[in-house]
Length: 198
Length: 198
Image (cartoon, rainbow over all chains, first blue to last red):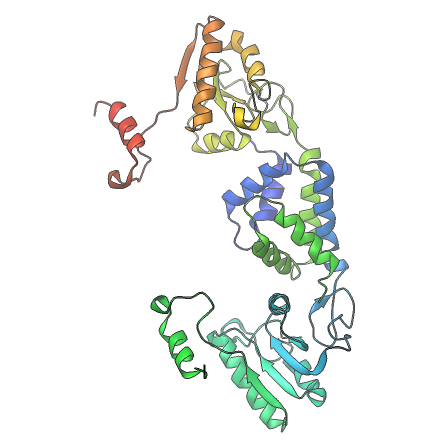
């Protein structure tokens, strides 16, 4: 049996997405066969317009509709507190948590020598250019080997530039709802060392 | 923070797919921001053309490029052996297993009174119209309550029409690679009752 080309090309497009295997790609494609054509057209338009209707903010390098983005141009936000994150999705997560009123800087990656990603490949120089207006740099990189290495590199760069402001990191410890019994050693030692008065 | 409309509309389109939640939809959308525009355009074209470039075969009601489909018009296949399945994906699965040389009939569902799906809502009448050319009907519906009920209903219809050919069902038993220890009761009793000479 020869599967219709129209079906095959959509299955292949879905398969190229991360975390979607051949079976899921088939399931999604055959599901879409039952969906009205108008909805397929809307989906297709969203895909083609995704990059056309967005741009990178020249200040924080987040993906946004305008340049500068609405966070960087928001006068009610503290433009001197810069939270450094790896990816645009991290900004989204921190914004949904709704507690932060400073601005961001998206590095678009971390230093990863094994993958040939050095300081030049991520938006580190752009962050150092923003130092004159900064009073606090919050390091909100993921607690991976590469994230830690990038933090260390960044700290040295800040010292070399005699950065006078504060440099802070997100707190490590037990996540809300977690069970001490099942927490890993590192998390527990972070939680113990970072304990607070009650 | 206001997320760009272009991002939101793609996230919403992904969320409408079965098995894709809000987090996965976000992850896929932000992944696609790094993909070349040509690939986005190809994905979009595959979506809009999915239903335009496929049609339902008038014989077996499978989704195909031509009507009748390449299986129904294949003279090397036994056109008198009809395998009845629920969905087009079942045809794909049976075809990949590469052992079957008859034709198919896709019901596009099963009788499901709770969801208001009666015999009229699926392609049962169309199957009964094909009886004059049939010598064997293979029931390959899923072993669910509704699948069993549909099989029973179909069997009665065949008897009422004095269908002279064979009516068979797919074998039930232990799947290849399964462990007897972890098999459920029904599967084990099917496997025991259907045992064969060795």
